[in-house]
Image (cartoon, rainbow, N blue to C red):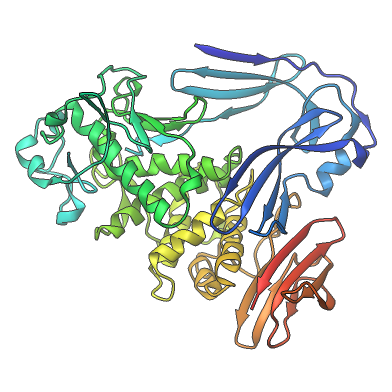
Amino acid sequence: MKRIITLFFILAVIPGFSQELLSTKLFYQTTTPHATYERYEYYLGGQKLLEEQLLLVYDQSGDLLKSRSTLGTVKKELLPTQSAYPLLFINDQWSAVFADTLLAGATHSVRYLSLDGSVLLERDLTAHFIDTTVNVRVFSPDPLTPYNLTYGGVYTDLNDANGGVLDSLTIIDTLTVDKVADTTFLRNDFIEIVDFDPPYFLPSTSPQDWTGGRSAPEFEQVMCVYHVTALSRYLHTLGYSNIMTYTIQADAQALNGQDNSMFNFGYSPPRLYFGEGGVDDAEDADVIIHEFGHAISHGAAPGTNLGMQRRSFDESFGDYLAERYGRRIGVTSTRVFDWDGNNEFWNGRSVSYDGVKNYNQLIFSSIYQHTDIMSSAMLEFSANPNVGGSVADEIILEGVHSLMPNQSFRQIAQNFIWADSLLYNGAHYNAITSAFGSPKNILATNSIAPSPTERNGVFIMHTPDGKVLRTEEGEEAVITLFNWSGQLLWSKTSLGQLPLPEGTQGVLQVQYKSGDQHTIKTN
């Protein structure tokens, strides 16, 4: 067991915050083919403001494209003048705390405690869900959906005993793995099979067993390597090779046989766990891709999977990746986990819009409750013939790099609009607003006001009357246009929507009174 205990004692909090005491420290940087994303932690007089982040995005020339912060005006006004120990914003006030972090086996959590030892907040830092999950002879992606079959009758798990039927539903394919001397390992640049959690099955080093039936433990191990490798190679073709900077470790038989799977970033490198309860999770590519999706999200925007809707999006994102993975190989479904779920063990999850849910009316009591409204919107966007699946994947991946703690579904959808502006000059604005708009109303003009701690971002809308620059509604911003040589062309003010003159080309700079700055290019 590895236990890390950091004690912070509460001192008197003196009101009257001074901006001079606030500083930032870079803790993470990643690049995409289109931008560099720098993430900073906040410090007050040298003490960390827990769970707060500043995001700065630069273009390929090093010019600032946008800044985004969780530390809004309200939070800043409530900051004390000094504190000898870290602060956490909870229950609408800053509290000095001590943090207790636990990393033991599959467990990775942190608790923030008050001076008297009472728990103020507890975070489960693993990303998983009840048997979701995400869970060379392989199922591609599972034994049912490619053949339009449903679970039941002869098409059941039978505790790995139904090999005669299910083995006929596999495919034989090739897989590139490492070989050292005369030993071949189930590992490559993307993934490595490691036995770090019970029940204990040593990673196979016998390639002759990798084309055997699904009843052998090697089958699940091969499934993990095969499908994580395939998705990783696809990310590389899109230009996102930097999103995963390590070889992830996976245990295909883990969690003491529970019907569960998870991603745990507490280890270096991070780990994937796949349980064997019910249907073995690693027999279903949806489970594998979903859990790997948590790793992708963490690689793009570490430390941001906080808050109900932000965590719910992480589940939706994994579901989206799983279904898109199937569609790229010609297999379409309205649900994820078609083999691992949707049976007597659990119900799986929908990625199809039910025609009823309205984001403005949703109450989130679970991170899994409304994943379908977000995953179905992303899939609708990717299925739009004016967009295309790979373009949608690229826009969504770029938008994921802008994720922040406690973002809502609406703010995340606005990330995608901004990403489209960055990558394609806003060419897919109508497709995004169609997929995320009515009747889902994730994006809607009459929507609930965004959180005061975070800005919506800046993007260009394409309307029948021409292009419109959209900024923070109701807040004055100075809009300046420069030509490609850096010459100032004009400067205007806006309170939310600024129609752009016909033929507007160059670099638009948006400056708010708060100091937040965004830059967007248009031609």
